[in-house]
Image: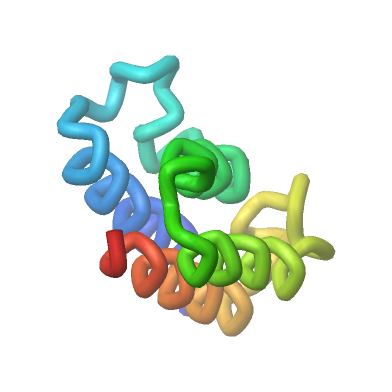
Amino acid sequence: MFKPHDYAYQIEVTLKALFKRDKYEIGGIVDANFIEKNPFVAMAFALGNFYNKADTSFKYKIDEFFEVYYSEMGKSMEEIGEEKIKNIVKDFKDIIATI
């Protein structure tokens, strides 16, 4: 059974560690409830934070991430579906791990 909140929580944990902030700080963007409804807002916030500071290869990874998943922007995790969310979360975490 698909549990979008579990995937949102994975992103929440990643963002809390990345920004060293609690879930209700930074306008609530780091909260799993928000992320479940707006996953790309949270991920774009995190990736955009590093974009201009990154080298070309890192920028390429971010650009590629948004090109691949562009059609899912503006959708909730429920609308996107489990298989694609699984891939999105994995790819997002892989990019963040290179920071």
